[in-house]
Image (cartoon, rainbow, N blue to C red; front, side):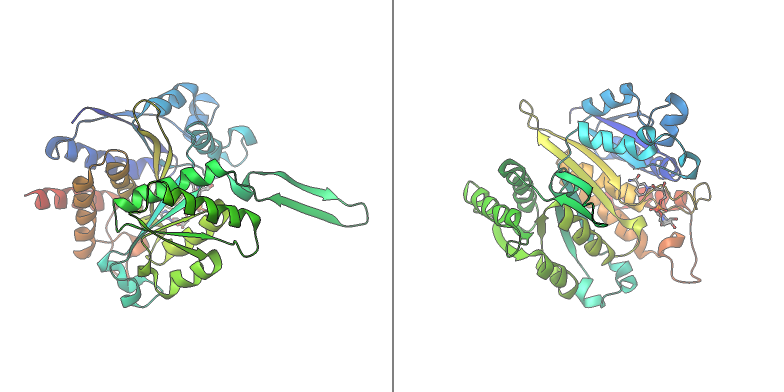
Length: 370
Ligand code: NAD
């Protein structure tokens, strides 16, 4: 395999601790899995502010633009609560998302068998669950103009947000969903509110048309987003890939994520458009959780969301499906053996450290590859 360049941006708080565990996994794949990843380290968030007075330097930004994938930890913490707004830690992540034009956010909800009892839903509803929410990330009501609070002059104010989508935005996110479905169980459920929203009518039309233009081998169904929310908690296994807009995706992906457990278990990916020459998408992989300053430096951080985010890079940036499956199995086996960081341990149950989980996953990779 040709050499692939990863930019590692550990960030702040527990970010560097969990990134160390990913480095072990990358080293294992390079030594035993036939990959040739080269890595560079960069700074983002508060750590970049301390070093450069910016939440990400221009040099690291250029490296991110050139990388085959960016592996991102987490940013923020009380130390930087008072820094100027434009250079706050989160600004580094927002700049990466904007400049890399990462319009598709992917959040899997996978239920590891060993954690099925920890869900708030019944075991048979979530055991074996494996769904993927594809959320549009750069359009819709979070960005539409006008966006303002207007003083009406009569003691009243009016808050305005604008839900707006153009054809091309809906088309490109549906293509991502159809293409991903082909690598999974070949089904896409599109969710909107066409019964009350014009943007929902257009969403439905464009997804249907895109499906007709080259994706008819994939099963497509439409569902109103509110009904989709109900179905997600009633019988989530009916879904494979769900595609939806920025606002509904924000809520539905949180619902889906919590079906399966702790924040420390949830990976994510954000993808851009395919490059005109190479066909390769810009991509950033990160855990859903933040920098957890309350536990930073204590060895209590769960590295699984971070390691599973690298697993998503194997799957979606490098098409190394077998390697990604192997890593998922190594995580599942580690959990099966009862190893738990505090966030996923039963009350009063034994716990292990960040490093012990990372080492156990690497040992499982070795055992599985045999
Ligand atoms: P958080 O996700 O950092 O933590 C919430 C709770 O979950 C904490 O109790 C934490 O200890 C726990 N937790 C989170 N990840 C864990 C892990 N891997 N293992 C074990 N426990 C874990 O959210 P927060 O406390 O609201 O925010 C803390 C900082 O992170 C803030 O500065 C916030 O702005 C930032 N943040 C960053 C991102 C990001 O970088 N993408 C996302 C969310 C929050």
